[in-house]
Length: 318
Ligand SMILES: NC(=O)c1ccc[n+]([C@@H]2O[C@H](COP(=O)([O-])OP(=O)(O)OC[C@H]3O[C@@H](n4cnc5c(N)ncnc54)[C@H](OP(=O)(O)O)[C@@H]3O)[C@@H](O)[C@H]2O)c1
Image: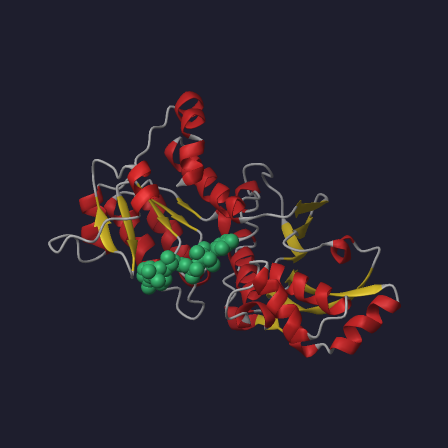
């Protein structure tokens, strides 16, 4: 919302787009709809108003009451089911709105269904911010790279483990390193999804499903977290000119795609070994060349930018 407001003039001038926020929803807020648009100044000063007792009671009623043209879905990830985000996105497309997701769950559980529904309804289903925030990853293919064949990829796609491994190298014990990652706002209160490799595994599955066209299931991604490596091994690696990193890989095979996330000992000379903090990177192995992309130190505005860029693609049809 803040980024949309900051970019209001560019959107108006360069893309002829005017926007207003007509709906807000979460479990705590309920379903809030205001078809004339919430006043951003009032929202910033006093927060969202209480839900009206006669207001919408579910996502479909809410989309109709808000007269939504675009839905931004940013609810918490449920990696086992992709819900309720998938239902929200489906309802948006069925109601005639574009569906934009920061949530990876629907990609892993319902990509083909939502993609086909969007095509059928002449709407867009976009999700650039799900992997590497605002960096163009999904939108590179096929527009910027027409007719390439993606043979595989390798990258570091999780910040928490980057920070924890670095702090252990510097001498903190594992639990203190996790607390440090939490203090600087990188790790969640419950860091399990990051430490055990779930977060990068979901990203690998999303990339393989969308960019390699393989219906890879999450349980088909081999997954080993960083807790499998002792503090001593992490520090000894540095003494040998190496660093442990949680590396994501996928490779096309004659029968599909083989994919994994696991700690790997990389030489300092490997570009992935040099990544620090929230910086993430991916190298795509294309049939025509290799392409590496590094996202340097993204903050939350990078995720917001991914959503904004998708909004423009959908609303301005670019
Ligand atoms: N943070 C990042 O930098 C980042 C980057 C890329 C992608 N993402 C993805 O973006 C999404 C949001 O991230 P976040 O860090 O803001 O997650 P979060 O802290 O878990 O917050 C998610 C929001 O979703 C709401 N919510 C949760 N379950 C819901 C449900 N069943 N129905 C309706 N609302 C629900 C929560 O509010 P209530 O508790 O009131 O329901 C909360 O406002 C996640 O899917 C995440 O994976 C985040």
